[in-house]
Image 1: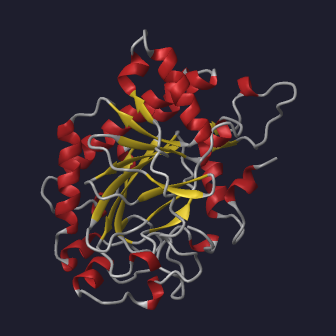
Image 2: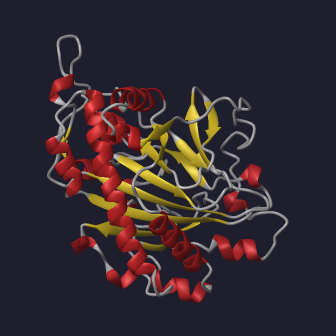
Image 3: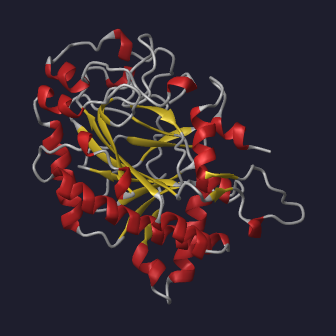
Length: 355
């Protein structure tokens, strides 16, 4: 999402399917995917295996006896990392398994069939790649399908795949399960910040949930490409399900890239800018990226979670005190999204929100 013209952020121009390129078993990737503008993808990865993304247990947050200790862990994870693995989150294995299966079956369809749900001009929704705005732009080594899931009236069923046959049913349930996690997490994060919870939880109950399914094919030169360009997410947070045991997600921590190792059944929670602003900078939205593998494919499902459009994004009143002034403006979610899509080229989005 870096360095793109804001006027074109609402849509993405068609590009070749990376999955089809990978099927040609090329010895070298096309030049448009080579990232000479970045240092070696592999050399910047931390070799210290003791650096692990924090693990948070939802059952311990719910249990009154263990809640205080787990809240402290959650608060520290949000302050120091901005990302953590969530286990025992209450979503059934069946729901996760079904969505994983439908995602795999969708990307296994012939290209002609997948293109039935391709992005349309002026829209980011559908099958393709996101935020491709020029023919000269470097491309990521992935294909994706991006869909608005909740509220239900936001769904554009013209680009919700009918094949695989159970795709829509699985996505409907999965999106509601992710909302359940989002609302619960919002409550506990607010408790950690010692701010009012009711209004914030209600905003996520009625919020916007958008889902992106990613496919990263094997790549003959994984050290020269990115699966997903380094970026910071703009919603409240993102919930990521790794669909297998191939690592690929990395988070920037103290100047080094750390792998977020896949953990069966866990959901990765990544703080976004809305949460950073709400916490007046106490919680950090981390920079992250995806890398690819020479011999293994990888899939992931990411749910972007926003409060409802009328909710006011700004530092929580309880955090504004003598010696701690607000660092950010207060705007509605709708205005916030307008700021993102209309910001100046190459100008950090978060700076447009600072006072």
